[in-house]
Length: 275
Figure 1 (cartoon, helix red, strand yellow):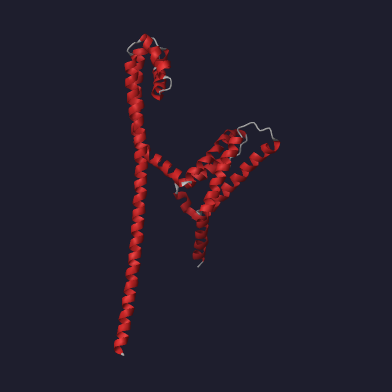
Figure 2: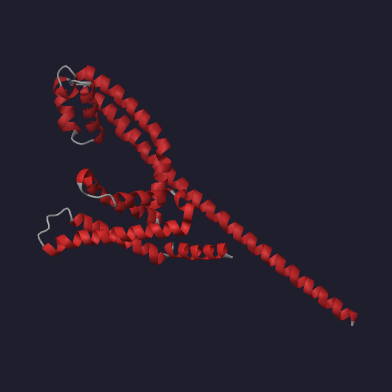
């Protein structure tokens, strides 16, 4: 009896922390906290505002602690089965570290609380989960990109290193080629100065840009889009399975009710015939 009573109030607590009102309240606090943390980066000349901002920050952190405590009590050991609950727990724990002494550098980490929007907003959470799912495929693309960078950096050092300081070392060549890959000032800052000494250098840069900026980097987009589509299809399949299960339960209930009605009719006929 006691176990059922405990399960009853825990179920009510779970419904409370998962209710739209509670979730929207936490979301609003996260947004307010993001604004206050941003205001703290500006020089505050108003005395009351300089006092109010840390106070508001402390109140919001206290509410976050209460929220996590309620979830820990409501879910029990199940709380730590969710990666998003771990994420919230770590972010809030960082906020509780004192800002004095050697921990003062962690003061800047408080802005990480804004990332809690990922855990409370389903649409953002889906995007992050899709990105995490795409990491294995992105790792293979990164390996291909790293190999291209290494080969291109070695070639650029041997081809242009004697006259161009940008390509004098392997590390310098890799950094310069990274600038070329981003297409930020590559023509005026890198390609044209190099072409003054090596007129055919444009061919090397064009091939490198096509292979990296246009080919390999677009593969990242393809992998991420594929992961998002896969996530969408998985959710649609889960909805279909859930709908089918609900329909099957409804059919079973109708069959049982029809069987009861037939039994009652049969009993009624037997009673009428016996009279």
